[in-house]
Image (cartoon, rainbow, N blue to C red):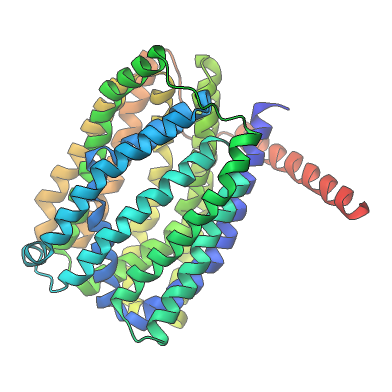
Length: 445
């Protein structure tokens, strides 16, 4: 089969997950957000986001490294080594956050050190969960990834609801509920792993000198870019904590979650599917086609999805989240964020070409520009200035990335043409015909 068909097929698995997660997430938000109210919901979600500071210290980069080299090597030693390093970094950092949670709360003018302490333990489990999903996607096991993430979301809904309505917990129910759900999902992964290891013939050999040298080169060039990106994301969260009231945080996190599940998850799904294919591609011409097609499809889905969500958001808030109705003022900004974010898929091309220095330059320029804007205008314009930041970052990222790709002899296209839309619809048609044929065969059996 053609590579484009395999990408479309894998993307279908990821999108089926999106539909399932949409239902589970809608129920979760409906129950939990309304039970807690904007202030408590905003506070606990902020603290969970705050603990992501640990990702600055190389955790995110290690997970990215796994997604780059596991598709090529399928090596168990690589998985174990990266997992050990992740937890060697995460445990002391998260422990420090838990110990100094009273001081952190004072700095941020918050009064919930207990929530932050347990959120640190929650983040440790989330790192393990994210690593397992990276492994599944890197090995192109999108069906198992679907089952695992759906399991996590289902038990998250069940556990959190039980803790709120049966045991009377409030904000802490969100943290404990997710911890229970993540633990169950991780257990499911380890139940699958012996068969995965056998069926895919995962190598148990030690990494050779050539492998180690390649990892070192990738780390030297790629780690700075990851640190820059994650530092920006943490500072972005910190600015929210410093300048945005907890009630407005609740409005933001609910509206952002709706956009994330209904629009942004699609972009993430497509990017996750394309990553293993781009890492296997070495011809510049083919890489340009894959990236351009991905960006264009991403843009179309984000544009249509964002407009649709923006139109129905007033109805959703009025009937289902009345205490969050003031979040309507944030909708135009969130729509623009979703649309412009579709362009940054191009960054995957730098990893495939091992041009991590250029990726670092792109991140530095785009994120520094956005951060300067936020620091200057957040004290005066509050959350609205902060919501402009990712729009600036994504736009600058797209422009600078295109410039560097041209220097590498690769022409990346962002805006879809008529023939691109026709091509995408043809692939959907092929996929549907193939799926219907398989269903008919199963029914005959």
